[in-house]
Length: 85
Image (tube, rainbow, N blue to C red; front, side):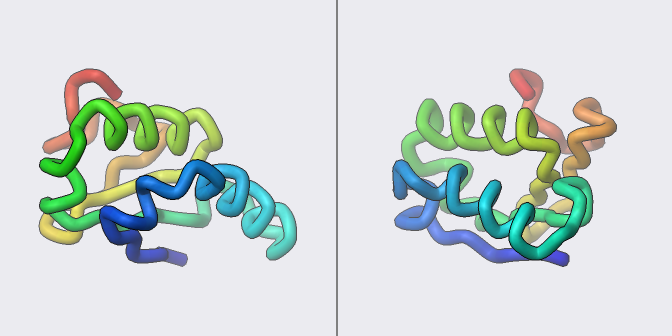
């Protein structure tokens, strides 16, 4: 399952908690969810974005740029994966 997030979504301080509750409420594994972010999100406020993506990975949720392959929390060295994650 995937969810597309915008830059304004990423800036929501409660988003990670909402994602965690949604995963638990849906009865799925965090690895079953992939958050899709646009390249503009990756370029916008990079410190906040990298913090968000790191914390997302810590939850076990994968992510991908809408123009690249998935970044799975099980394989943090996926091609195109930011080196800090």
